[in-house]
Length: 61
Ligand code: SF4
Figure 1 (cartoon, rainbow, N blue to C red):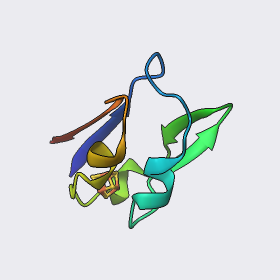
Figure 2 (tube, helix red, strand yellow):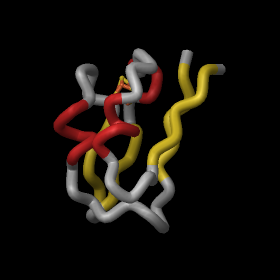
Figure 3 (cartoon, rainbow, N blue to C red):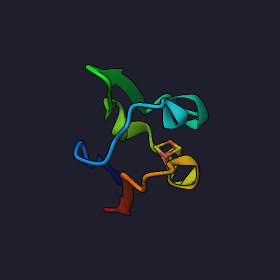
Figure 4 (cartoon, rainbow, N blue to C red):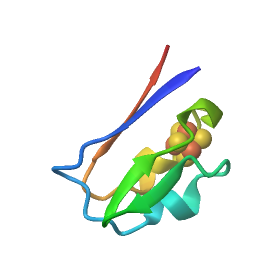
């Protein structure tokens, strides 16, 4: 299991994580990425790699 967090102060809503995540963890709500299906996270860290503002953290729990 992984904990996925997006810092709303940093998120610019460019949807890169929404597009890259293979299991659709993220959804854009009011211009911010929200990890609505964090339970599905595979820990691949693709979202971290594409996030230009380093707003995402993925932690194994
Ligand atoms: S680590 Fe991979 S599976 Fe998990 S939220 Fe990021 S892109 Fe999706």
